[in-house]
Image 1: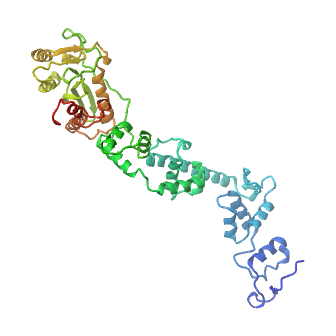
Image 2 (image 1 turned 30 degrees about the vertical axis):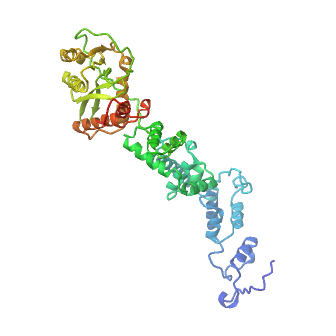
Image 3 (image 1 turned 120 degrees about the vertical axis):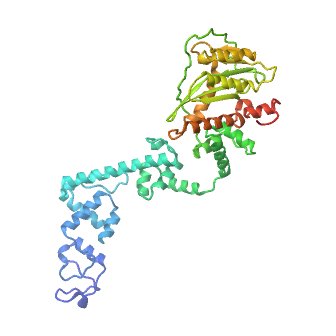
Length: 454
């Protein structure tokens, strides 16, 4: 039998407040665990329910094994030590059901709640709740990855950089614990805090990113890293190519691109005799107004169809003239040709290459060509490479301007105005690397073919 400490005076018939000194709560816990029969429950003064029923102990073991909270948190809530919890666990669980806590990296075995009197239905409910939590966490991570770092939904978490993972964790910390987020993204805690410090540091490229963003937005969001590098050099900023590529990715300045192609054909058969292909895929010219290319392309928006007929100069790719309409009529191409002829000096007689479409074989087109002594050239039937330079302009136009936008609420008049704005920008400002990083009009001015910007 244990001897009572001298600081304790316990008398079964006396009032606890008057006849006994109160020992520290821990002492009663130790005594209760060591020898429950030695403590007179009716006479001992205790607080915080230091003596527990069997059901209370079983519930404590369930909470311990569920691992929703740590053993320390469960113990503090009950006012007992962790050692007491483990003794209760050993008492109620068999050795096969007991979870080993001695090895840090051992995978814990599954407890059997049924041994504690818990129904199989309750066990299944806990499992489903845990599974739902994990699925919701995974879904939220994918959603935030799409919102914040512009990743496609379904991206593999392991392909994210540590910086991107840190941004995702910060965005979800209000909803999930740091521990669960780190585990799901497989990011070390130390790495997370290192990245947080790094992100809070002012970027030495902040001004460069700001200028890159301005250039990107001012040029229809179609500039890649090469043109952005040239544009930065024009304003006195010199940055390495690989740095621009990295900053462009970080700032999500990704140019639009698309493989969508819809070919329009105006071929109606042999209306008049074809002519020879004089250009023969040689799309270069030493001077302006020597070789021109033309064709028609179609745009489909919710408001209807719009057709564009341009003339492209082989010297620098400049759009000499163009016309837009809702029908691909002969007037569309004839008006375009009339405007193009106004740009010619008296001695300039360019070759005009086209496909075998009906517009270029009707009397109106032929009469204009003969009147101004212009030379006709035609591609082979159904052979788009014979007019590749003009097709290339259509590809750039649709990739940079058309495919990237939503035109559902745009009227035909608004769309035509937008195309006109793009072509004017294309001629006057769009950097063309093959023209010494100048636009077509800037290139002509630099080579003395124009004296001022038109």
